[in-house]
Image (cartoon, rainbow, N blue to C red; front, side):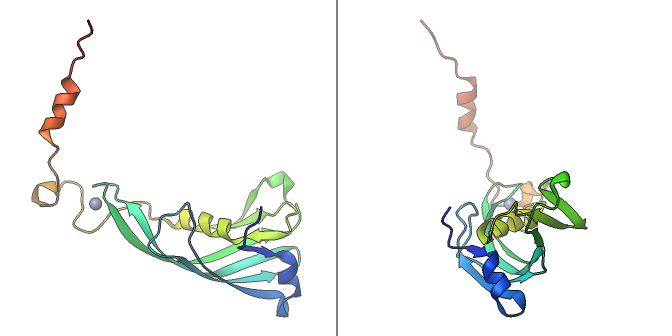
Length: 166
Ligand SMILES: [Zn+2]
């Protein structure tokens, strides 16, 4: 697959101190955002492993769990990921947890790291558990919330409609 955001392991190995900086400033089609996703990453070769650290910033467009309206959520988090160059962990499967929250991803002999995929996975993991559009959107306060829409009574008609088959 031709992906401009793939980084060759070879390029990391040949960089100064085996450390390569990578700046991502692009969209990821699968993640609705306002503007681009920004990431400032450092890829470092530790022999059998590649360590990826850095900061990720984006404004995600999410759907509120309560009112179902779309809202924007500013996200700003750190990445700390490890990749294994060769299949060292066949018996452990695709992902091995190194310590709380840190996983080693097996590259399965791939010669490059897919930055877009890495960022996609990290955004998904860092999404808030409860997506709420604002402090005024809380369960049980709908009566005092002017923006709350009363279900359109006319819609009830459709529920009771009976098709007269002749
Ligand atoms: Zn809401």
